[in-house]
Length: 471
Ligand code: HEM
Image (tube, rainbow, N blue to C red):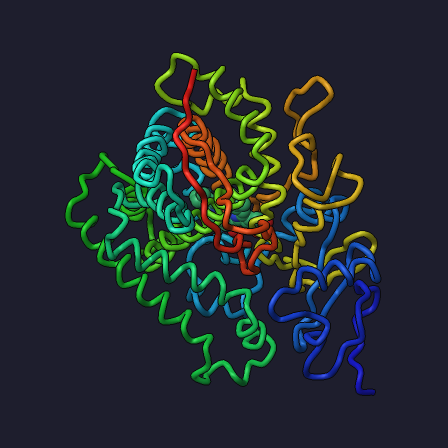
């Protein structure tokens, strides 16, 4: 009688211990290989107990599609009783449960990002403009080595800052340094051992343990965001929004009291979007350059294609991707191996539902294991290693297999996908056109094993920079 029972027809899983649940089945530092091991034993849909709370882990394309796409809204909730909910004070869009506030805020973000020129010239100009700053950093390091971590974080962060706040920040500005540092730290904390303990043992939540650091970090960022907000309120002109914050303030004024919009929402929302768009894009770029450096023949083939397509042009535009099947294939393969958000963002069943024949009660936490789809045997020409052929057909045309899901799928799918893809393309192409990136002779063998967190981060590395001689 010491073993708690799973509900009837619930997905199978390891024996549930009282109090602990299945936390002993998972490495608190990095559970990804445990999830894969459990999939081999229990199948593509199985369950684990985090303390007394059941969670269903979804693996492989078939089950993922049934949940995220076919059943869409039935799986579109977010759990509300986790560490991450407490750190973000239940505001913003990423962690909002399925309901009116999420819907209104998501629709607003999609519309505003589009109006700011997603797919149009102006967004491209912002990205290309910001890329010039990292070009300068790289130029200063020609013939030398450089750790690119901070540089990629800064570029991604500044692009979002331009969208949100209408301005960029110098790389040594305290604003950006503080925000980047707080969020990098929180991303690691949120998927780390202390978050797992916080979620498992509610009684420790008020203790002064290391997880409190994330609350302090959010408070620091919120103070900064509020300052920016106050300044926007002072200087904005109705009908002439300069950025996302202006658009929101204008919308807030127009709406009646039934709206879920509010100033408190806005400051967390802005941070939310900044966070969602910084660590993700920069870690993908970091992974990309790690693989390009250590696969010089792939780097060179990209450069040949870039030279050919951009001949006579000042700069790349997003349209050019349609003439660069190889570069497209490489960037998609980078996203596949980077596996930047390995467990997506946790979902939650919004109603009693079924998945692959199992019963899932309303409120069950859902962990979409995107890793299992991006590496699924049978979905890829080669699921292991780094191979752009995964995205090329036998005519060398770019193709995108269905299992390409780094942004997840369905109604909660990443709302920054358009922006992220534009950034990855324009930044990579602009840098590869001008520079050659070399794995330093003294750096030893490359270690591709990422550091685990909400986002996977490559181990710190250095790159050697050379100027290319273009024909
Ligand atoms: C390579 C870059 C990126 C990757 C791999 C990525 C991946 C993801 C994933 C896997 C999710 C969870 C989807 C789900 O719950 O099913 C997500 C959600 C989200 N992403 Fe991204 N993302 C990236 C860039 C961005 C950017 C640039 C933005 C900024 C606009 C952004 C904003 C968001 C937001 C707001 C959500 C929450 C959506 C919701 O809950 O409705 N992401 N992203």
